[in-house]
Image: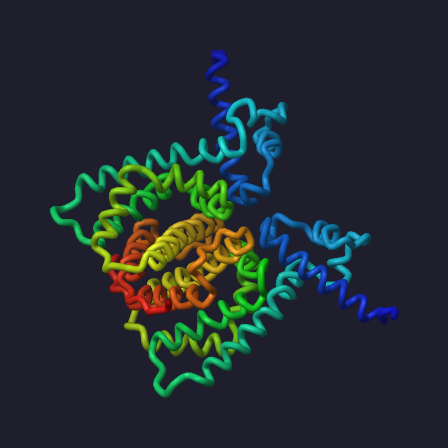
Length: 214
Length: 214
C-alpha cells in the first residue's frame, strides 16, 4: 500500500525530529546544523528540516512539545489525586515524578533528558525549552503551591534554589539516561528510586536554612 | 630576542591547552578533534596536539592539572584555618569555596566550569577528571570528615547525594560562568554569594530525611 503524500511527509517529519533529538543530546544544539540532521536522517534533500519543520528554533520546540504534553498530562492526573491539604513533599513529587515517569516510559536508549541538558545551556534555546516544558498549567500550579509551603526566602535565594533544583533534576536524569544506555547504571537503582531520591533532596534544598550574605 | 626552542614549544603547548579548554567547554570533548584544536590554535601542523601534548586523554588531564593544583592549594589553606571541632558546614565550605574562588580568580570569560561540565558527561573523561580534580588529598580529607558528620545513610543514597552535590556545584558554576560572559548574570550575585548559596544547599541536601524505598 502506497502512503499518501501527507503520511509520508508526516513520517519524514517524525524521523527528522527523532534524529535531531538524538544528535542534539550527543553533540549539543549549537554543534549540529539542520543540514547534518537531514543527512543523518537519510534525506537526500539537505533542506529537509527547513521544509518539514522550519528553523532550528522550530525544531527545538517541535522536539519538546510531545514530551511536555505527556508530562503535563501525568502532572494533571497526579494533582487530581492529591490528598486534602497537600504538604511540601506532595507538591515537590508532582514536579518531579511526572517528568521521571515520562523518561521511564521512553525505554532504553532515550535521549530526552540529555537533549534538555544540552538545550538549556544556550540562552535562546533555554528560553524556548523552559517556555514549553516548565510553563505548563499544572507545573505552574505545583510550583506556586510549593512556594507557599517554603519558609519566606529572599528573592535572590529563591531564584537560585529554583536553578539548583532544575539543574539537579535535569542532570541526574541525564546521567541516568546515559548510564542506562551504556549499561553502567547501578543495579539497585530504578527510575522510581531516582524520583524518590530527587524528591527527598529537593525538599532538603528548599528547607535548608539561609546564611545571610548581603 | 629570539625564544629558545623549548620556550617556544612550551608557549605552543600553553596555547593548545587554552584553545582546547575553550573548544571543549563550547562543543564538548567528543565533539572536537585534536586536529580542530591545532587548527583553532593557528598551528600549521595539524598534529600539533599530538606532538606537544599527546592523546585526547592526555590533553584532558593536562587542562585539568593546573586548575586542580590551584584548588587543592586553596583547600589545604582553608583546612589549616578551620576552628577546633569543625562542623558539617565548615567541611562543606572547604569542598565548595576553593573551587568557586579559583573560578573567580580566572576573570571573565573563563571556561573551566563549562569544560568540567562537558568532560564529566563522558565515562572515560569523567574518570580522568574525577581522578585529577576530586581525588586530591585535602579534598578527600574534607569529604571523609563531612561524611562523619552526616547521619548514617544507605550506601546507595550516599552515592546518589554525592552525584547530586557534584552536579549542583559543577552546573551552577558553569551557568554562572556562561552568564558572566554573556552579561546576563544577576547584578546581585557574586562568586562569593554563589559559594554561600551552594554551601547552604549542600548542607540541606546532606541532612534531608531519607524516604524508605527498598
